[in-house]
Image 1: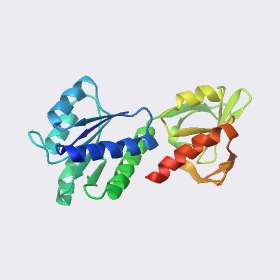
Image 2 (image 1 turned 180 degrees about the horizontal axis):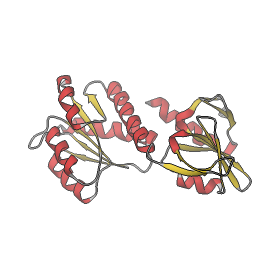
Image 3 (image 1 turned 60 degrees about the horizontal axis):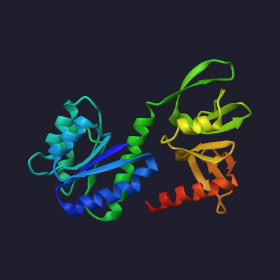
Image 4 (image 1 turned 120 degrees about the vertical axis):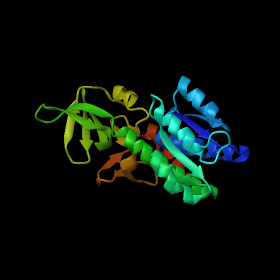
Length: 239
């Protein structure tokens, strides 16, 4: 996931880059963040290596955020926009450019929270476009959005996919293969035989031995995976 952040005030740019570096890994893996004090330089780089997300101040010298957003919309690669501004009255003007979110400049805590909400919204829109072709109990192949998958369980030479609707699907594949395929899509391996969609984890047992999903299902956490669970939820709680 390639992210550009544009801000002409050097100190605020450093803060924005730091906040994005903290928040982005919760929603995306393999994140690369580039900072710019000039929108024109960002646009030139975007033409060479497109960005997936562009976060920028509306009031910028030479080329403001709205003008830069207009140019981005004319380019081939689609990217998601997040606007920064200290002037809340500009939020209505920003609607024309369909930003994902309008983040108000202010306290670090508020900006972190608003960036987190913006990135979660991007994650949800991005993942809705990703499907798996899975077989139901009658052997019918169905395209299932990964956002509908709550957990995956290994069953001999097959994987069983449990969805939010309660339907189950099977696919002949190893857990190692699917863990690799779903890397960066919000799934976390918690056991040799289990993988969960982190968006649907409701609770984690204090000793890290179990997780409870929003459906009420409780899954065991393997001893060797508890450090991963602890690391993920500690980072999440800091936000």
